[in-house]
Length: 274
Image (cartoon, rainbow, N blue to C red; front, side):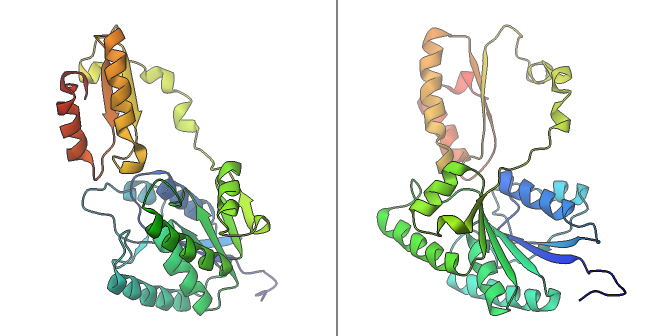
């Protein structure tokens, strides 16, 4: 209701499973910061905890004046007790903050956040798919379970946002939601830091002591199964046959770090990989 002739800001509660290093966390932080002018919108960000092997994006959040509310029980792995605790805490939080919109990101937050929002009667429930686990992640039985859950959650959701038209077609094809409920919105990128990137050319080579004439090939990705670093190292072996002096940079961290270091040694790539 208007107060003193003014329409109160729309209150957005954004929920993400964890603020691990990656695109979804950056997106959630930037959205929370941008939709928080106190006039049209106020935004609150809720996040679970990162795993011990993961870095986080808390520095970016603080730089954007975003102070997330952390729910320790909200985590990536399935744990029935923790998941029930997370749901109970989320219901308490939603009832206290009385948001107009609950917008969830990533699978676990999408489950806990959407169920809590419906329990509390939130007017608008939105979920963003930054990717999905409907193929290439798990075996057939586990994938069917996740699909069943996501289809049920789709019924609880007013609008589902996907980050590209191809993903929209996939989500619709899996029966998660009808096409009319899906909205394709491509992620915005902050290009300002890249406008003067040319000035930094050669700096990394200098820091690593790599000669300017040495061919350099890199991969920037989390060290997790879906990123398929094996394909990068397969290509590295073939490239070295043609360019013996080439060097390779692997930028990232994650649960597969030790396994990939072992793989590099086993394939004889250690002298060429950093």
